[in-house]
Amino acid sequence: MLDIRLQTCFDLVAGEGTVCDVGTDHALLAAELIRSGKCERVIASDIKEGPLDSARRTVEKYGIADKVELVLSNGLADVSLDGVSDVVIAGMGGETIAEIISNSMVAREIPTGMGWVLQPMTKPEHLRKALYEMGWQITDERAVEDGDKIYVVMRAEASSEIRSLTEFESRYGFFSDDDETARKYRMREAEQMYKVSSVLTEAGKEAESVHFRAMAYKFENGADFVSLNDIYAYLDTLYPFDTQEKWDNSGLLVNAELDCCKVLVTLDIDKRAIDEAEQKAEDLVISHHPVIFSPLKKVNRKMPVYRLVQNDISAICMHTNADKSQFGTNGLILRELGRRFEFESEPEYINSEECGYICTFKESINVGTFAEALKSIFGCEYIRVSEGAHTVKKIGFCSGSGGSFLEDIAAKGCDAYVTGDIHHDKWMTAEDTGLKIFDCGHFHTENPVIWEFRRVLEEKYPQLDVEIAESSTDPCVYL
Image 1: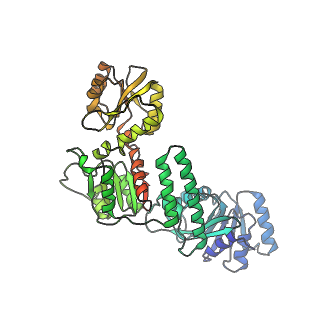
Image 2: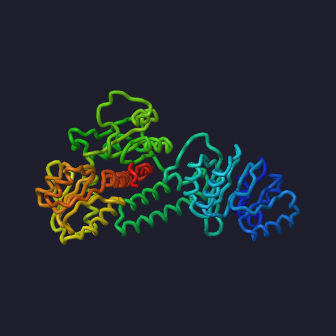
Image 3: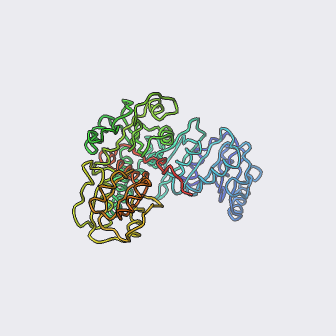
């Protein structure tokens, strides 16, 4: 009577009370639950009268109208959950299912012990991630093949711990190791990811392309551990730690002495990053700004360093050594400018510190056009720009807070300087020298490097689950 999708939903119903079947359509699941004796009562809801009429004909056909309550409802909005042990939501998109659950949780208190049996037609990764963010965990997940399509069906129950899923975990799912259909499902997903990777390569988006290739590798082989020492040694070949400035403190700053599988990449290791690392059970956090900069005279339990040690999370910080590397902040900016504009000559370092570049474009560029390119590169909405010239040709740039290099830039005959955190006196100096300043902000000129950190890691170690921190956002708001 039931197709394989609904049969799997039936199998995952606990049968310990009343079942609510959301979006019941023809009430076939409700009828089978009653006729089989798995439960004594079903609430069958739908948002439209038409499907409810079909459901009514089904329950009348099988003589179970007294055990199936039909309810016209948008999701669970008009459904009483008293005595409900299971809610089944099948045949909708993953985002829609997540929205129904979220709206229900906002509107009411969900009965303790109630389970969700869910069958998303699309975006199962969105649903998995949302479930964990709402305090549920997937206790059973199965893949079912119907014709040439493979669907997933999952059961979620309340979780006693706060946990978030990484992108890989939300895509990979929670199938049992002996589920051959799940294996086939993952191989199909891997094939699609390789195709996406190829398209991204053709579009010149190599960091994103590497990410999808690494994701596909993990779908085929699973995620695995890499030695912390191996990761550090590899990063040292790309961002030599001995090139950092004397005042800097880059390196392996927190050593939990454990192998790593899950890595969180962020600009700063602050409270938000630590919260995320804890909730995603990360083994290692890699940041641009050092989590320990000046000598610590005391430590308390709220400090990031304390919480890293407490949770056995290691931390590698790459600051000025990354600023100087071709795979770091300024190297990334140089490549992005080169993708958009043609250089007249080879770029050169600003000075002996090698923390920024001077480059000359083949053609003069309108200030507005150049500003829009910077917004695209840095992902910023606003740029502070000084008065002056309407075109630029020879420009200097330094990520982060590069105001101290302004005189060097002006002395080398640059039209403009791109950096962040420019102080008032530097704006006045720029006005006096005719230098055009583009202050794109400290955060925005540096944050793109975390995608580069992920790229080099995933290219070398595709088995690692490398996550860009969702918490790595601009600490400022603009009113």
